[in-house]
Image (cartoon, rainbow over the protein chains, first blue to last red):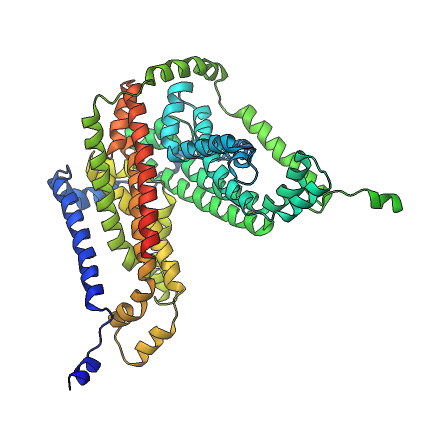
Length: 266
Length: 264
């Protein structure tokens, strides 16, 4: 009889599993409630937010194209910042990737130098790099290019290093057996194996850099962000929406170009 | 002919020579022209080396005297990240269902995809400035920004996961006459649950990282503390903050990696 009952009612989890799930839900709820209760927010502003947001977006319509020529010029600058910075970072990341990959690094010491460069480059965000380089070089494009370069080296070096670690060691052994020099081993044994990954990673980073360089101007490091900041500071909301639309177009353009290149190369 | 056998060259990636050299020339021309025409103030840049020396000597040793300010800033970042992850997940799940081509009708699919594309296209810092202007300075603007940021990432990947599900279970439930909501809960959700949990944990980590950045434009958290320190030329305190940010990011990355490995 009792057997019949258990067959009729089916449940997905055993009681222990269910308790664990409830426990996890409880913990998440408690953490969220703690964050909500203790966060330093003026709640009147929160309740007012939908009205304010609608009001702001209302003022952005219609986008005002009078300033379009200078916006497009700034967009061109933004593309150049991203492209040049990616281009230089690609070359600078090659030696870093070489010493940060376990199978090619000359010794343990260089391995740790390589890893240190990668970690410190990757864990500081582009904007924070830009903040630093604007303080050093003054506001302008050069600070932006260097900021993007510094952040890109970590990304490119890490992924490229991983690609180098995954290569097939047989061609290298063959080259070593015929007495090829270190340089020739790299050129004929390693480079052909990582070349597809190299292009894929570079294109991916270019796409990311295009997005990142749109915000550099907000800390004074050149590109479209300067115009955006200027328009926001002077409450030219119709121009702001025009800038936002061009940024949207830029990002979609970048995605289309990188998809096209990836399909052609790989 | 026999002499040629002695000589071997690595085949080029681009087979046609004219195309290959054309691309090289185009790349070099672009590079030279843009570098020449960019409005770069070389003299100003050269002075930078000296200024860099001043900044770095000002930054060492890092100053942890005001660690109370540092901890408050970090707690705020953490709260922003938690709220944004929770809110972002809540909004991402329905949006992912909308943007999955195999279960939602075409108009809703395009609407969902459109929202995701817009949320993904704008860098969090741009979104943050707009929200700061609309709802005022502080952590609320930061949380709203990161919710948008989370939607762009989580909803996209979750929608892709929904498109990959085994459709047999949905068909079985439909054949048994289950209504739409039951189909979703019993046929689709169990299949995407592991990915959802993984994305949630990843997003918490990623939001913590991003909240350090959006604070720079006034959206609360440790980023605001950092921007203030930089603005006051307090380079030793700024270095201390940066070091703590890097440390916390490394810890949270390791932590979320461990949790995800245990769960999945």
